[in-house]
Image (tube, rainbow, N blue to C red; front, side):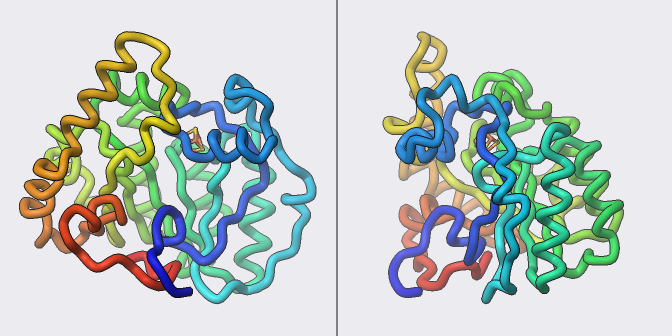
Length: 262
Ligand code: SF4
């Protein structure tokens, strides 16, 4: 695939889901905006209701020509865990390499580790851990697990011998990002991705004075100047990977092929 690659295509050649909607209800959610545009939900309030789509659970998958990402339009929660296990089994049975992306609930990740222990070599866990500060997390990602639970899930997958990775996209607390990375690094075997909050005007509804203040704080923390400083501070860290939003500011070459994950 030629041209500039961004978003999930930096990580995967195909996006797989078994439902839609997500109780994590992140204020910056790209999938909610896409669901509204496509008519899959009629208003933003419906997003927090997770719905399993049986046709997607039953679908057969080929062996895709590269890593596939699962899920992208929901998360992995108690309510959809059976469907998640079925879809992952189908993907792995077809020979795929699967990138599992989640704001992880530790007990769900424990069950995935138990079920797919023998498929360890073809699974990569990437956990979204966007800050350590639970006040910021509960504001921006109100239904998602707190920091300690995400850390616990990361440690669990790492100790069980799975490849582990973290996504700090969007950075919710740039002032603490080096502390966050230092704490996560011993539990990460693959990569730590860093990216800005994208398309704020389109995705984040300003519903209160605090939201307006938080958006301004995020904008101030991801100016080109701050991003270049961050890049200089972390560019030699062996696990750090930069999302397209940072590469564009730091003057790095953008990927021209999807699914490279580097
Ligand atoms: S966890 Fe992902 S899918 Fe769920 S609300 Fe947050 S950004 Fe959207």
